[in-house]
Image (cartoon, rainbow, N blue to C red; front, top):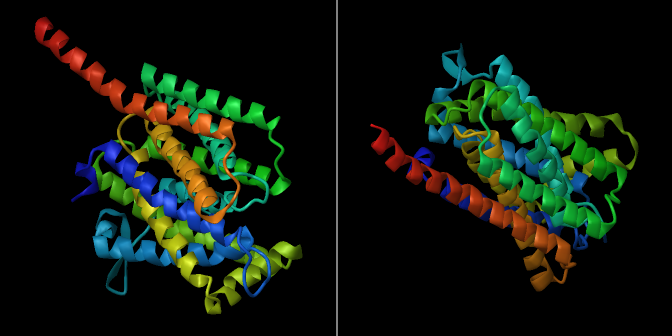
Length: 342
C-alpha cells in the first residue's frame, strides 16, 4: 500500500508505534550499566553508530523503494545520482541539527523523556503558525485550539518542575533542535507542502541524502578535534562500538530512526497548514515518549513520569483527537450549505 493512500491519522499512529521502540531502546542503553565500561553509555557514545546505521538503511530504502526516481539528479558514469536543490540542501542542514539532537535528548541524566520532549515540541508548535502566516497560509480555528492546548500542557509541566532546570548541553540541544525545525518548516512550506505523493518522495530523498552524512560529519569533526571528554566519548562511538555487543540495540535505534523519518515527512508535507500537521506529528512523538517512560518504569524499574507530565500527555492526546475530528465535522456541515447555495 502506498503511503499517499493511507489516511493521515493512520500514518500518525504508525509513526507513534515506530517511535515507541526507539525511545525505549535509547533510554535503556543510556540508563543501564554497560558491562565493559561499568556505567551507562552516554548519548555521544550511542549517536555515531545509530546515525551511520540510519544512513545505510535510509539509502537502502531510497534505492529499493524507487523514491530516488522522483528526485532531481545528475548522471555520473552512466548512473543517475539524486542531488538536492538549493532549498532541500538548506532543509538538510536543518534536518542534520534535528537528527542528532532528538536521540541526544533522551539521554540526559535527571531529565525525564516526557519533559524534554514536551519542551522541544512546545517550541516547534509555537513556530508552526508563524511559518504559516509568513507564507500566507490560513490557520483554522482547530489548529489554534490545539496549539493553545499544547501550550497549556507545557505550562503545567514547567510549573510542576519549578522552571527549566536543565543542564547546559540539554538547553543547547533544545535551541539547536528548534532552529533546525524552523529551517525545515520554512523550506517545506515554500517548495513542497502540496500533499502530492511525488513531491513528498522527492523532498525526502533530496533532504536525507545530504542531512545524514552532514550530521555524522559534524560528530566526526568534534571527535577529531579532541575537545575534552566529549571527543573521547565520540571516539568510542565511532570506532570501538562496532565490536561491542551493544551494537545490536543500536541497530534497532538506527532502523527505527529511518522508519520514523519516513512517516514524519508524510505527515509534515500534507497539504494542510503547519499549525495542523505539526501538532499531530509532535504530539504523537510525545505520547510515544510518555508511553515508553511508563513501559521502562514498569518493566525495568526506571523512574516513573511525574503526574504533571502525564496530564500534559493527556492534553496532547485530546489535541490529536481535536485535529482529527474537527476538520471532518466542519466539512460535513459545509456540504449541505454548498448544496443549498447552488
